[in-house]
Length: 431
Image (cartoon, rainbow, N blue to C red; front, side):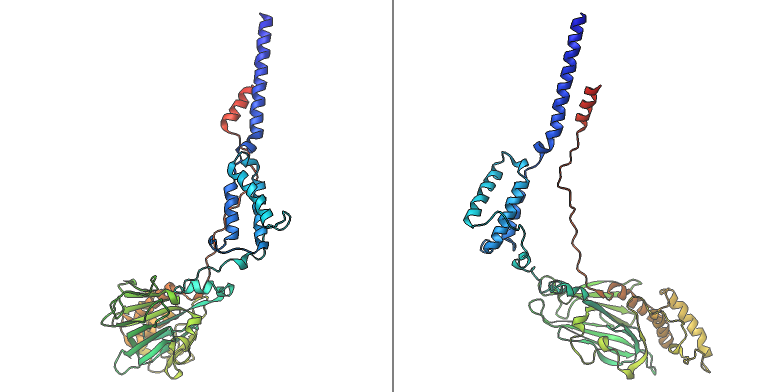
């Protein structure tokens, strides 16, 4: 019995060591056995290398580039050789590569990438009816292109493309924008009889025909009618939604219409505030500055029509040091002129009313107070609020191309992770 027990114990220990050896060999050989054959990826990269514009077979690369593509193809097959043993597609590819090397008289030694590759590929397809597509296709300099903002509101206050802020008289019809792409004209009428205060009661926007993107379209709004369509009854124009209108609400019950001209990179907002209208536009500066002449959005009001002017900072709103000033009937020294003390209560009431909607005492706040003092119409306080909302919706900015997502790059080395079952077997055998 003793000898039989010893023999059985020896057999069991031998069997355990054999199992341990087999499991160890499986773990060591697992990277080779389980490595995936990536010959399909090699084939795809090879096809893409000689058909960069989408696989058009009629386009043939020069022999020098063909040899480079073949060497890169051969290198790829060698890297995946261990995982492709016995794969018919792999062995066919290796055989075909040898034939192509001989056919094109290519050497196996040499570069596997071409510095001429960018010049052999076609430029990206440019959408003529998309301003950003046209500009970004023109190169890195497009990153410096800027959008400008122009707004007209209240009694009336003008913010130009050049970040100047003016309060003007400008009674009658005046051109805001006039170039070969777009024309905008406003008509201002007196608000109070016997006062120089005016406000906008009519806006006409003409989108001129541009290639096949759109035919000429005219939009016109008045205090009696804020339509959500062009004069021909349509709400869009051109191909691929190059031009369209959207109706919405601007808050506080203010009606508004947005017009988007994709082919110009331009957006317009027209609001109806009480009995009058406001206007705002965001437009590329290179388009806005193409034409000279009288354009309020580009050059501002004529000097004889200017009541007050400021130069704004594009990075932040202008914040005047005090609310008092010549806007409110004071001299340059800041002291109330004789006989104007009765207006102090009006100034306080106007300030309180404007502060209900405009918390920051910037130039829009001052415009609100100015409008209430000159017209006495509480609805004018909403004009400055709407103009500030338009500035937020259509801010001046720099055109920036969206950065493509960077793909995650993984280590191509094989990582061996033993399964839970294998670990348990090893623990049992070692006990």
